[in-house]
Image (cartoon, rainbow, N blue to C red; front, side, top):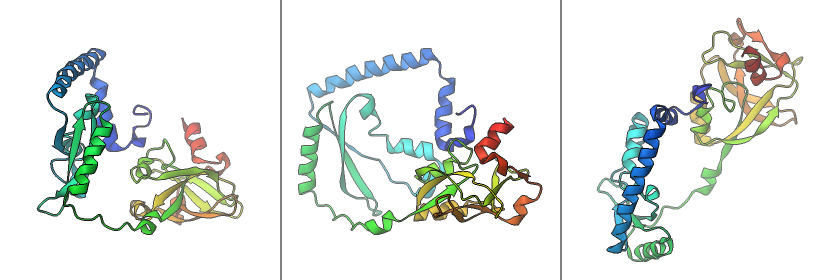
Length: 272
């Protein structure tokens, strides 16, 4: 998918994976051998100690900082714990208070493989005696509110803008069709290519996908929708309605009517 449709991959994930394209099989196996050597050395530590305790994360970043440097800062988050899985160890993270700036601080209890029960018992004893603030009340009602949204083009799975849904933890509801009252057009000079879905009494059923987003995520998604597209209400074949992509009239200037193809995937396949 990186070669055929790189735009469908989250940019940060794409950057991480692309680094591996320059790695040879020889380098891979040398890395495996080196990791095995380090594991043998690490295993000897358990002859003299029962458990290690490290900070879960050395610091806390603001969301804006993570957006600016996601790979570097997420790597820093794992500075004290990334080795656990690589060296086949077990670990349990527990809260340990607050920093001076009010952000949370935690510790991770680390032991050899299969020491999970011992780690959990230690974690339980720690939590029973630690002077920690009570957890905040959970507003589950507010967290559970979601919005269903229909996508017909560049946001379909495997298409260039699908990452805008996955990055917001969208849940796939299913593949459906509109009521037979819509026309689909290929917008002229759109980058990446995008369609315009327009209500029309003499239209046809158009294939689409429905996703579910949290209310806040839906709001941020709508903010990123560029003109002449917009978010409106789309009627499905079963008569139900969901939010979805619609278009301003100017989207049809120079656009190609592709309604007869029944959906955007068929149009892309025909163009290929």
